[in-house]
Length: 256
Ligand SMILES: [Zn+2]
Image (cartoon, rainbow, N blue to C red; front, side, top):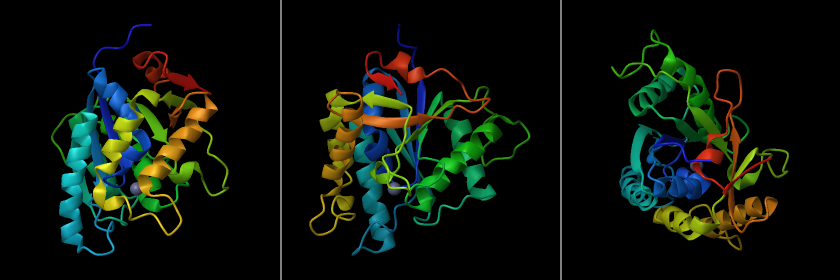
């Protein structure tokens, strides 16, 4: 099967470091094939420090995000919603509709739309699902003059934090991408978020990069490769039904 021509990919996540942690390997594989990638963080990352002021850490994280995105081969944008405050509301939907109209993605990566460990994550996934159909509706007003999109993009939800929802079981996914060839590049890009590497770890627990490697090992083990990233494609009516990643990354995508 031949790879589809150049596609536009938009990653929409809650915090500046989420894209690399949950989809960095897949984005790197796609960037290496010449596809165009934009990483959007809805929040400014202001809560990601125990020592810096909000203004200081937001500036630090913007620089880290731009570096990480460049290592993936992506562009970075930040919608500037205060960290910890990503509400599922009309105002934020209009921001995401504007983002989608401006970027015109063929494919969107985002968080699960429910049940992740914090609301910033699943509200982001929900806002994407609210915004996608409205981005196509001519009479839905958004914060851009860019015309509505013509086609509903492919939407893939990543794994939840720690690969699990509230039931404590490993989450079900319907797609696993073999990222073995780019695991080090993924972790290097994720580790470019230097301010965050120790922030989420605790005594006797692994740091963020080691934890992320372990999740990739778990998804890889499921399909008998070294490292993987799990996704659940949004397959409701109106969403495209083909799994386009299978065509874009031949030999690397497993459907479950
Ligand atoms: Zn996050």
